[in-house]
Amino acid sequence: MEPYSHEEHVRHAFDAFCKKVLRNEARDYLDELARRRSREISFSDLPVEIMEQLSSWDDYFTEERTFDVLGHVVQISSDELAEAIAALPEQRRDIILMSYFLDMTDKEIAGLLNMVRSSVTYRRAASLKLLKELMGGKTDDS
Image 1: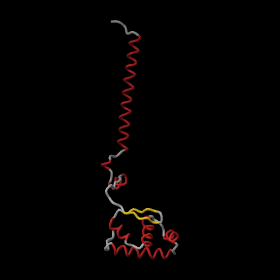
Image 2: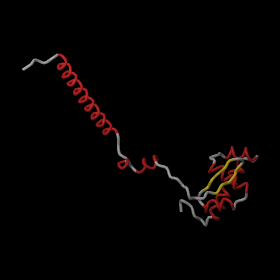
Image 3: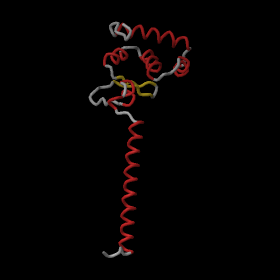
């Protein structure tokens, strides 16, 4: 039997080194997968509340009614509500839209419409009462 040559020894050493590197890489990969599995949760395991926060809905076929309020565009997708708001007088409609859809305070609305704040409060309350009548008394709380 012939003793190993230096080239053959280098080849075997390189082969052993490559196998060791591949084993360590495979172990690191499997450890990383285990770490991810311990931190991640599948979508099917998430509670409904969190799924709703992560999701979005596309309303391609819904018709929205738009209202222009002092340069702001307000879109309402509920036909019944849009019809009731359209039936209001213009100033009362603007007060309702600015208050509930543009999140303005009575003071801000009063400044834009050149009115007293208490008048805005009164007209908003009266407009809500009229809206309830126009919608046939249908509200979320009834």
